[in-house]
Image (tube, rainbow, N blue to C red; front, top):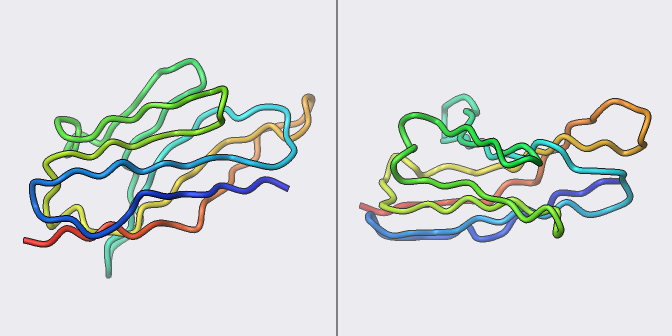
Length: 121
């Protein structure tokens, strides 16, 4: 079984910073793409950032100047560094990972439980 455990959320004032972490644990062959999504109250879940195991990243245009995604493949961990936070960044942030559980099988997608980020004005 694969689990994604997120941490690092919290309450911060506008202009502040947070770093989210997500670690994949369990029994699997490899972790491939990892990324972050967020869901604000009353809104659809949206893509924020992703990183392949080779380091290719993709970031939502509206946060590109403020958020950075990185990962430590040895720890099966992905990070989201968020700076200059704005109240509109308030949301539950979810980690998603494409995991190859068994070598000769396709990747399976897993989600974390979510971590709350609240930015006060």
